[in-house]
Length: 317
Image (cartoon, rainbow, N blue to C red; front, side, top):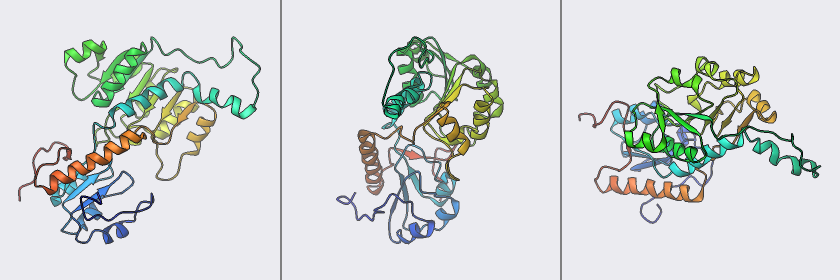
């Protein structure tokens, strides 16, 4: 960026306050944001007139008020596609880690320093092969997860806004469910791969969580807002669900102590938003940001423009 543009940088990992962020934007054309930058309607209304592009460093963009930016005539871009394979790998890792008690088992030797040896009943987990996986959101990442899961012998079920073509379903031997409520009770694992929108907020609500099988579990590598976290914790505490494997979780007010207690009790596996945390992914994310900026400043439509829901054109001037 420094080579291509007259760039200003935040040299720390600490998010800037709204006022500090705005103070850096006078005369600037582009704001490069990440998911920790809260770009709400108030901040967007206060952007200098010079700012015409918000180039998000990340696939998710629910930290940006897309409607407010659109109304202001500010273009928003993100970095999709580059995260697909790494995120799918993480989902599969979590899907294996919870039933096979990986975190619990990996901690025994470092903690105790000794091991009495193999026993026929020690650290028994649950087999993954033959289980039914219900994927919520069969886009790029959901399809990549389904492909991996099929190799592990899982039966693929999915609910998605758009049904996949017959060739895709046949290759994955996937069953489409037009109703999420109908699919939920029929699967052993629910894995979430849909963006956070008005329609998907708490898509796994208390009613749906309570409808799941008692030995089922939830995997979420997408967005924390997709799950009613309080209801999830309550169901696991009550034994209505066997557990959850989460790479994302509510953290605005600090981590839930009840969720942490479940993790300590090995009912929940928690990873710290690591799904895209590979060197390759982060480099490709940065390169995609630069491609979007370069296209925009050269007068072209950026390849990864984000539009408000149900819109496909710019507002009339």
